[in-house]
Amino acid sequence: MADIHTDYLIAGAGAVGLAFADTLLTETDADIVIVDRHGLPGGHWNDAYPFVALHQPSAFYGVNSMPLGSDRIDVGGLNDGFLELASGAEVSAYFQRVMRERLLASGRVRYFPLSELEHGTDGSHRLRSLLSGHQTTVQVRRRLVDATYYGTTVPSTHRPAFPVAEGAWLATPNDLPQLWKHADRLPSNFILLGAGKTAMDAAVYLLQCGAPPDRIQWVRPRDSWMLNRRGTQPLMAFLEEVLGGQALQMEALTSAADADDWFDRLEQGGQMLRLDRAVRPTMFHYATISEGEIALLQQITRVLRHGPVKAIESEALVFADARIAVPPDSLFIDCTARAVTRRPPVPVYQPQRIVLQMTRIPQPAFSAALAAWLEAHGGDDAARNAMSIPVPLPDSVRDVPRAALVNLMNQGRWSQDARLRAWIRACRLDGFGKLIASVDPADAAKMAVLARLRRAAEGLPAAAARWMR
Image 1 (cartoon, rainbow, N blue to C red):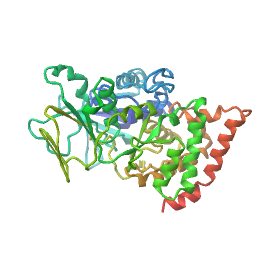
Image 2 (image 1 turned 135 degrees about the vertical axis):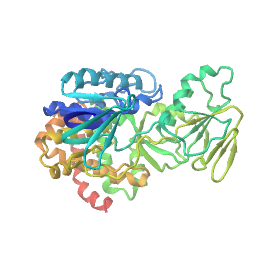
Image 3 (image 1 turned 180 degrees about the vertical axis):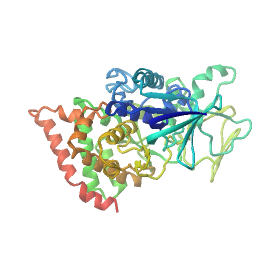
Image 4 (image 1 turned 60 degrees about the horizontal axis):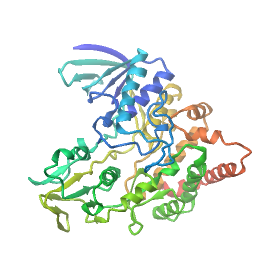
């Protein structure tokens, strides 16, 4: 058994692990070992469906030291007028470049793909090659970094929670671009299972490929609120939507009667979108979408709301309260994988361990990079943890105001530390600090937006006393 030594052992070579390693390289002289079950860096992007893309701008995704994309404004299509959204293939290629040109090229990173990490009861760590079974003991001088806490799953790595009868045609979104191989048996009907962003992506793909809307059925046990992509653009032309939207969130936290009222106010202000104005959403997972996508998806009117699927038969869907017959040769498309497992927040900094979580939601890469900066410059673990309160990941609508408050309170703490504030402003993964800093003091309209943002922030302590109890 081989024996190696390192300062930091990072479990997971996805966006979170790579963003942490990238900033740690910049801020320290540490030696790093990265281990991952995948054969290539990028984590779940290796398993993603071919037509997946980022749903927030490429401008603030990835690692801090290497840009993703070219800050292009898209012309035409459903993302018209907004910053580019990297495709899954572009993201995968980007993370391979990060590993090859940035991390390995530093001479301070060793990478073990197709390997499992095992932990001994005595605090020891072993890497085991999935190909050979060869084991390597890793002696860690500083910390193990867990970049896998949320346990991301995507359709191709997910098993449905319901039985599927023999003869039923079940696919994942990964299979849709290969339907041409079934030219002798094309589906007569498409049935989308799931209400989240994956199902929305699959629906958009089918519609853009020519599937008639009346041949698509959509199982949506509960509808979702979605962020309007207009409010995620770190561009001066969108300052009102971005910073005015943040002010609106804070104002609503101060004055909304309950979570539903909070969402209603954000919808009226153009910050939140939903698919059906007649149905009140009960779910929110930070899916981000354009108004053009909403209009396209609203063409699908055959929506089934009977709760979760209990079973799939060859020509029927079974729910707790109904059995719905479907046409022969229906294609069931499983979009029920939960991308991020809801696990209870734990301290980020622990003895001999860092557990990476989102301290700014929904930005896992920025959160990981900030965690690395705090590891290098943040004092002792008590001080680091005080600056790194994990945001509780919401599921139902009622969870969201509390998550929004933790998010905003973290940002307030960061703004009080001059060194951290300067790092955030220079960080590519932030984007919005630079937008604020670049406002011309002579522009009265934009300065009024900043003044509104500051006034709204003054109400947060009172809002926290109400929502956090």
